[in-house]
Length: 186
Image (cartoon, rainbow, N blue to C red):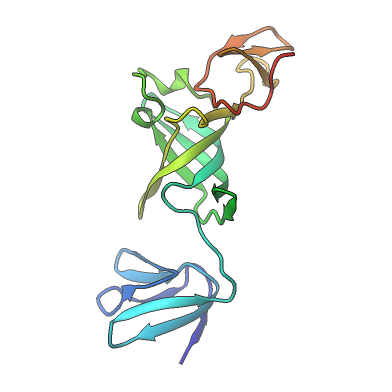
């Protein structure tokens, strides 16, 4: 018998079944990761979800876009907007991720607040996914800040070489810039 399920629905206890396709374990329970039908294999002690439609969630190595929500000396909290693996879009099933200072760049960085500011839009790569968090990396040239805002007046910043300039108040700022930064000085 197949049972209709939605993402996050409890499928089984972890001591009875292991997670199969489109299912995940958190604590002592197995949950659905997709909309579809739960299928229980009692011989293999596995539960999986047969999706209504093939929906792929983001995974390790996917590129994500997000906005920096908080910056501390050694880590930043990022609100995730979208994910992709190559040209294929992925579903973002968790809204926040962490970027540690050691994963920002190959060079030594003393403080993350020198590289990112609250409100910056960044491109990052999913470094790892754990039950208690998603961890990002920006240590490739295509990753980093793709759009920044002035820390004084919140106007968009324009890139010229490796610096950012505010056309409204004249502020000059520095960030860990992506080679794909959106706004450029003319």
